[in-house]
Length: 555
Image (cartoon, rainbow, N blue to C red):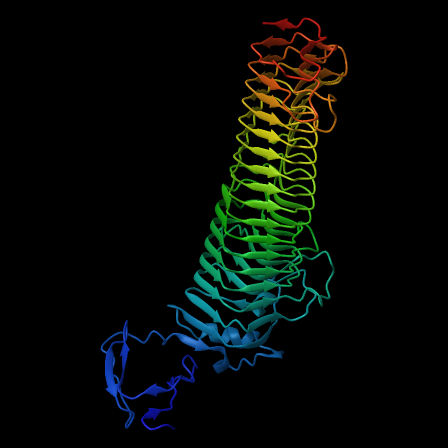
């Protein structure tokens, strides 16, 4: 020992290992204790020092180490009962259970079964579980349809911090129909924090919440900086919650059994889901990034969705009141953002690109949604596709370089398509097919491969009473010189495209090699079109306006 140095550790007389193997202290240093323990002393290393507290209990008084209860962490012994003994040793006021480095085998049990659920790690009120980054709690191989490492039922003020929770997905011996083997099971709990944890390889979910007829919803949950990796069914299932926060987490390769989503928001029968915030997370390589099946008043903002094999974000089954804002969604195998039979949602300010089909897709009574201020480009299908849906607002989006149409409205009624830029798409900029009473106003459609704006009806479904007004259409028909129009009203059968209002539009052929044929073309089967105050001077290489329709009114 060097002259004047004192090699030492600070020992805990309760032998709970809280402070151990401290570095050397130089002489003439001061130890100052603050908080509920107060006192100070100056020492020179020549004698023992006693510090007397002036009041209160030591903040470490309710701190226990599972090693003191016989837990081995050797990767083979069942440590479940020993960890539970450590938890149960703490008073009603709670405390911290420290689980040091090691692999602790957990007999998970079945939380649905009142006999076997005692074998889970069962938390109680006011408990913090603290683990190191090299602490592993590993589920023992089992045949349960449902299991949990941590059971958090009817308790409050619980924290799980650090460590790795590992399932037995690849050694599971039960029937494949089972799907709720999880890391953390939440049921009727309040004030739960889970942070800095890894949840991986579970037969079901990393974290699962469910409704209990007596206990009700779980409330006030924060999941922060948690990694969900290679779970079979979900990263998180949110089924009966109020005030649920998911912040700064990662969800990777959730695949195996449906839905296979990073996060699944799915209110259970009898339960409700309200006030959910999902922000700053990364969803990569899952089947679905986020799936929502039902009302939740949820905010999904500032997340990244990369390479999910089916959809980035999926709102279905009457999901309402979702705010999907400021996300980046790219390289999905199919749709980027998919809204199916869901209403009253806001999809705004997202960047949606290079997805395997449509960028944003509204399908089957996806009504009264607001799609605004999104950048949608490079998708293999349409940029924005609205099919059999009504009363949607599609405003101020930038839709470019998609391999299908920029904006496609099909068999849909009373939608507003306003202030969008739809340019350089492989097919038409805006296409209304068999759709009625839609307003297409103040859009900019340029350099699209086919038509700038295309309105078409057929024998089965009329395109009726649409308003095409105040749009700027320029330099379209880029796939074929004079093959397409800046604005085209067409019909597959006599009278199937009727009473449309086309006014105040500006059409220009432009200076590119490929030019539109006409500024505006009305074909022979179209009837009762109103053409008013359109500026088509130099609108097409062949002519400004061509009208072969029946009963056209030109003003």
